[in-house]
Amino acid sequence: MFIRMKQFVFALALGATSLASTAALAAEKLSLTEISSYLNGFSTAQADFTQVNDDGSLSTGRLYMRRPGKVRFEYDAPHSGLVLAEAGTVAILDPKSNQPPETYPLARTPLSLILARTVNLSQADMVVGHGFDGVSTVVRAQDPKNPEYGSIELMFTDDPVQLRKWVIHGGAGEETTVILGEMATGMSLKSSLFSISRPKRDR
Image (cartoon, rainbow, N blue to C red; front, side, top):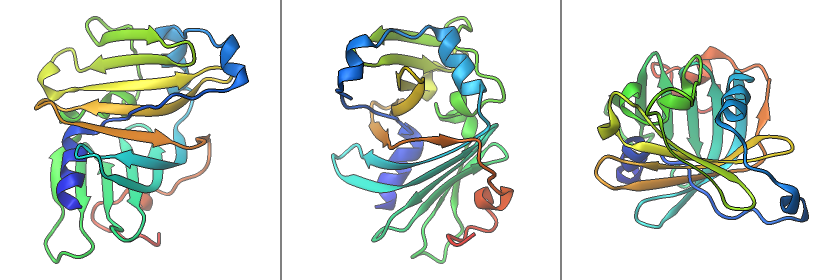
């Protein structure tokens, strides 16, 4: 499982399946400005998620986000692991191990693009794909200075605008998909929830 979670850190990909509904018939392609404004419009968010790993296996859990720079992926049993990001570092925590968490620079993962203090998808060479599938707007973005870090493909629905999925494409070709449930925003989330030094599940 934690090998897969390591793939998740390197791929950190949000992926998408079709969201079909009668309201989708009236959906419209969102502009990069609208998407940037949506992401900049909240500082905290939480949602249930289903993760499709690079090998096709599935994991479920709960996502907590506190922008800028903080995220918590809390995995359900039987894995019960954590992936945390704070202070520019991503950590993988294995509850079955006595070893310290493995850590990686957040800046080296595409997820850093949506955890930035200010998201500006109109920045030169950041967006490498911007399409509409008739239901959702799909944007693929990368660090324009470091495209070798991989890219993140984000899927948004409109009316109201909401992030529904992402796929992170790792530099070695690996992919991880995260499908989000209904995302709530604007709640109070304690800093301790994202603390790598205090990685308890019951905070």
